[in-house]
Image (cartoon, rainbow, N blue to C red; front, side, top):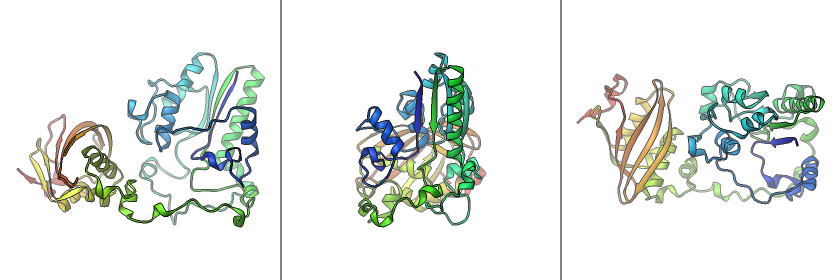
Amino acid sequence: MNYLLFYPDEMRAESLACYGHPVVQTPNFDRVAAEGAVFENAYSTHPVCAPSRASLVTGWFPHVQGHRTLRYLLDETTPNFFKYLREAGFTTCLAGKNHCFTDKATDASFDRATATFLPKGQDLASFIAGEPTGGNYTMLRPPLPQEEMADDNDFRYVDEGVKFIRDCAREGKPFFLFQSLNSPHPPYRAAERYYDMYDPDKLPPLRDLRWLEGDALGRGAGLAGSLPGMTDAHEVVAAYWAAAEARDWDVFGTLLAEDVIYRGPQTREQVRGRDAYLRFNVEGFAYDWHVAVQQIIGEGQHAASWIEFTGHEGTQPGLCFFDLRDDGKISRITDFWPDPYELPASRAHLVERY
């Protein structure tokens, strides 16, 4: 028995003919569907690549071992079914987009790996920050000329996958191929021979886009207009950390009371007022940092969160306590960190002592 896990990125089932699309032609998918089983319901555990893939290969929810964002990949100590298949005698191959395994985990799980983590021409810091590679950015790219197809990652990945299957067939080895593609992840680009397959005038109407109307601030935080009415402490604190990690200071500010007070008991630092606290966060941590929420406990107008903060000095846990007003705005924030430290000179001008 051999296995092929063909894994496009961000492909919706409704975009395939075998799931009822009235225009799109997908003959190879249709043939597989006709010869096998078609599942009508499938649920992703996370909307981001790495956590979703981590769930797929471990059987765990993303929060079980902290795989919450693109930055937290599976290491070599984490169980995954590719390692078990390899130990059971299967020849395993990852051909394509990784976004799941660290280098050591890749070596431990696959006999062969032809994979990339970063888009061409982009470094890790800018990729994590979501920065475009330069110039005007668009989700629609011109067609890919025939002579450039050999350099396109997805075409190259598929060629590697085909070669792997033929090698295993020749050697008589059972195999598992993880064929992982970038497409149809935006920005969108198609080979020339596919680019003009469909007449735009014959395409079905676009999905109802009325959700785009209304409050842009709420959409930016992914809260779709519910932000102004949130009063549950757990939801408010979750939105607070999500906005902080996204550096969405507009949304971050809407969660704060105008007279919010922040305190750090270890350094006796205090910040009073929304504008001052926003400045404290924007200017006081002027380096690459990230926060991963481990747990939030909230009841009534009070909540506590356990976080992992990663900055230029490494990663450390922190406990943060929140008090809310009746309208759901955060009125007080108190942070505790495991190690004593002195107030950094870089933010001394942004705080007062109490």
